[in-house]
Image 1: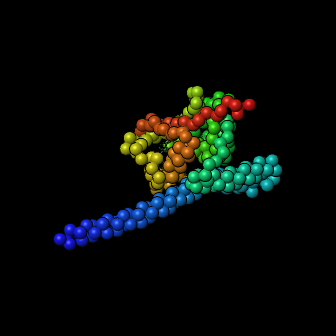
Image 2: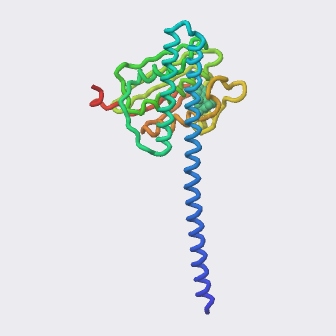
Image 3: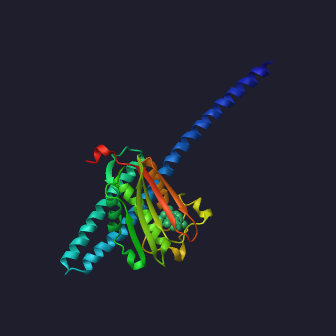
Length: 265
Ligand SMILES: Nc1ncnc2c1ncn2[C@@H]1O[C@H](COP(=O)(O)OP(=O)(O)O)[C@@H](O)[C@H]1O
Ligand SMILES: [Mg+2]
């Protein structure tokens, strides 16, 4: 007789134990998730700082090698300082993104953002046989955290360049607007992407740039760039899409909210 009551009690105890275990596992899972987020944010920050360090070193070297050309040396040092400030800004703003802090958005001119990316890169695309075309109306503005969107564009431009080496080609950055959004398209005439790889390119650490394909002077080959782009664009309430076929080049399109007209003045 007692056995039914005992069995019931033992079942209840068992259930309570399992619930406790479940609770512990859930809390461990939350901690691990937080660590994983921190890990990927750290990799992304390191990747972006690396993207800025290469041109920074190039500008500084230019100044050192041309001490008699005062104008050139001054200009190169000015760029060095500006890139240092950008690196510090991107670090702060990526940490804020990882912490889930709200950051103030600004209205930014798309054309100026894109032009600044090419200035920052200190890279003569012409030397690699790459023609650059920028087709963006002066008035177009997006609502964004400018330093973050510039890093997104920098990643897309560097990937486009990698895809066109060593033969060269055409890199076109254009923008189109509808009522609420602006689409910024980065198009290259490079080697394109296979349908199989296309499914994976936004995954953190996915890269096809290994061994000899890896450009020696860049952060390419870590597979973090597009994951960073997707995270930043997503945090802006936008989206990033891609169209590509092998040997037909690639177009990456970043859709972002349009700058509010009342701020246009
Ligand atoms: N414009 C492009 N043309 C061809 N393949 C590209 C392009 N952009 C990205 N990819 C592919 O997506 C992969 C991931 O890109 P990314 O996350 O920037 O990492 P990484 O550049 O370090 O490899 C690249 O290794 C490449 O295979
Ligand atoms: Mg990349």
